[in-house]
Length: 331
Image (tube, rainbow, N blue to C red; front, side, top):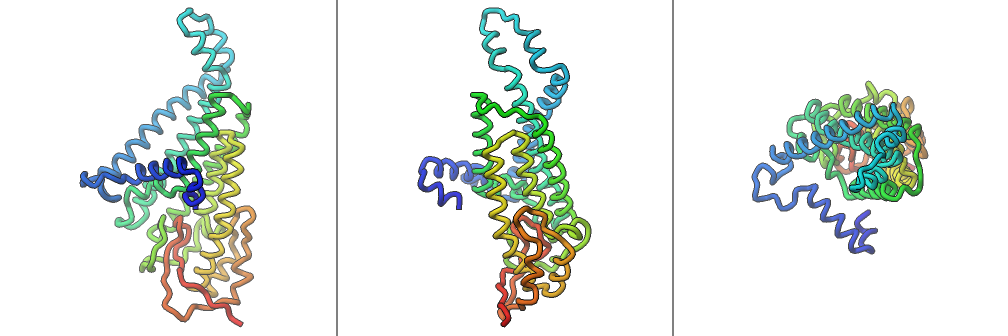
């Protein structure tokens, strides 16, 4: 959908396609260990790069967190003697505002790397062996995800360079950090609880190990993976103090889940019928503007389709099983 919208802006759409191609390792067919998503070279390279970025930004975050105790402004005053060889310009650029923004950026990148690493390692540790691949990192998840990240970084980068608008709230960043950490925990718990039933991609046929998971985090939330990702994305923008990207992220996620979740619940209802209706009555979705009572409302109005039923996993692996078959409304 994003690419079709950006076709009106040829340069942006073309650039986004090229970036997505790089993330998907297009053109690496000559190298056996990088040619497929299960290649050890591709898996190892992505993990190595994420580890390097995490290590660099965690070091920056720790150093800046320590220096924040003294106060950026006080430190700059102490070291602002200058030597007439351009150091004054350097100090002038790295003022208290930019150091504070760098502190927030390092926090953001740390959480971003942890998110992608946890997506991979929870899949490897708790899912079936054949599911593990470079795609489990979710780095090349979709063009929409890539566009959202680039837009967010652009907004932050412009504020970093021009210090406008002057939005500097450490309190909002800390609140965003807490939200992102809790959301990450919820998503990871969902993946662990689902175990072998979890999948990042839609499955065209039901696996023998696909069950309706109703225990653990699923005893409270019907879609904990979606819930976690929704609030994680908002918390990440709060860390950066990005008002535009934050609002757009919340709006886009709400629209997507408001459409996606009812479709999945109808599919689950097709397969599990009354069992899923009862399960839905005692759980919530938890995402704003996505009602939790949709299954209860339509539960008695649908029956199994007469055609063969194809059961699949959720797009983000949120459900233990899901059906592509459409329900037939009963009169």
